[in-house]
Image 1 (cartoon, helix red, strand yellow):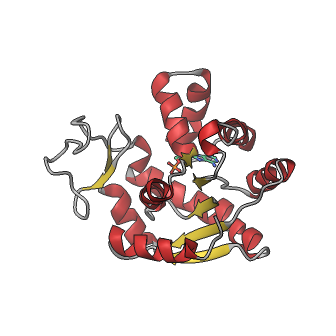
Image 2 (cartoon, protein in one colour; image 1 turned 180 degrees about the vertical axis):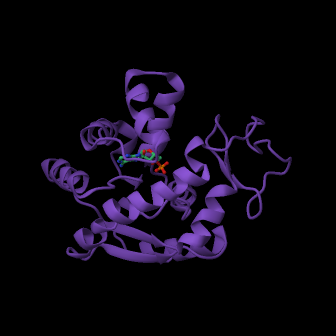
Length: 217
Ligand code: AMP
């Protein structure tokens, strides 16, 4: 099953993608995670991406398209995957369509996660993530058992540098202007499904399962 998760920063699509990936036994492919890893490792890709990411801007299309082209060819992605945070622009979506049609494949469903800006800002400012295993927590709604420490791997949790208030506002603005047009793009072929992003992780998880229940595997 090949799925795309679209939604503003903070809507919880990464958390939901992770849960669904485990239950479907397919990888979650997050361009944000791949870029952050490159930044941590200090590779040439990371150095280039950091300039954009720290300002809340999008990394150039050709860079992320290259990342996805390599990643979807990996053996673990042969039975499907969840794309989390890609595509984010119309040129990226067009490039993906071409890549998939070259492989005789298509996207089964696009989940569009929706939530108001006020709640998004609240969620982002309380978000903490593990630099080791990438688990994501929230200080109020999904706190770790020991404050500031990852339940899974004991590492100290961090606030993402792009979750600072000024950058958050810029990221929301970029989402509204550059990523919202994708909703019309995917509405055309009938694969689009809106998911209400409000409520607990468990409540949203049930909505996600319902949204993909009818997709053939
Ligand atoms: P995310 O973790 O998905 O919120 O992504 C964090 C940051 O990585 C974004 O604000 C962008 O700077 C960059 N990024 C992630 N995915 C993409 C993409 N598909 N296109 C361009 N930039 C991206």
